[in-house]
Image (cartoon, rainbow, N blue to C red; front, top):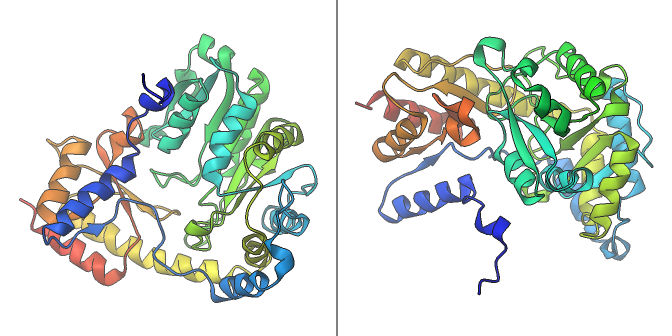
Amino acid sequence: MSFVSDRVKSLPPYLFSEFQRKKKEMEANGVDVIDLGIGAPDLPAPEFVYEKLVEEAKSPLNHRYSIYSGMPSFREAVAAFYKKQYDVALDPETEVLALIGSKEGIANLIQAVANPGDTVIIPDPGYPVYRTAVHLAGGVSVPVPLDVNNGYIPIYDSLSKEEVQQAKLMFLNYPSNPTAATVELETFTEAVSFAEKNNILLVNDAAYDLVTFDDYVSPSVLQAPNAKKHAVEFGSLSKSFNMTGWRIGFAVGNKEVIQALATLKSNIDTSQFIPVQKAAEAALRSDLSAVKENNRIYKRRMEKLHTALNEIGIKTEKPRGTIFVWAEVPDGYTSAGFADKVLEEAGVIVTPGNAFGDNGEGFIRIALSVTEERLDEVIGRLKKLS
């Protein structure tokens, strides 16, 4: 008799843990592997943020349990950030919830909203956790295709009438992982109208909302008319403030959904360590100059890689945000086949596009998570591929 549930047994290995296994094997054999597979910033968290963490960690009062929904001051900081950044008013008591990183929030939200057998519309290509979280909740994933020729905006007409009628919620993710696609507010306005018409909860995963280039400002789904009646949004400090390991994020929007998620989480966890929340408050209330400096660094890396890839013959569009470049594989290769070739012959890890859904076939995702000097090494190795 097995002690493991059927749902866990049927889960595929988490994509990026498999890459790490291959990386470890190659490094043991003396290969200098450059990992551009995982979207984890290599830059440090801002100094004022970790100084705040240290300061707050020295207070014995901060070593008790947090309030389940997050410390009031953290939720107030999130609300202040939304007002300043998007001119969206949020009630920190009912419309803001602290998360232990947005990844857990996504998984728990599905269980808080959907019943077993309910349909969840997910972007294709999209973050793999959407699909696995739906699976673990006993739901049914229905992909909405995102096509390069349509600017990676959802093609709602591709969904059948039955799929739409059965859908309980729908995920969007802009700026997008993996495609690096960005949108204007019009896309969210259309999505909210679609959700309202079909009685679907709309969820935008905005993990990369502040990682943008030049004059582009990523909108919030909550800026769309009537959005708080039909939508929630996930935010994270992982990418914008280089705080991936700190595990701090938030959910905002529809108060009924926020409270349902809070109820579920109160039975699972006791929120994040208070000093981490206090440090995150400082980040959210800052002038974002640290974020802007990070973005300048990512932009230089992006432009270097974008130019080189196109010169080599690996076609890419120049993104307006995220820490990724989404590139077409050369003719004659599948996504997985080309990713394997790059790893085996160049010692560089990239992510095959089909790992993000069927519509990702024909592409690879490359993370801008190493220095420009290492990118020069990557470019040199790619140029030598036969």
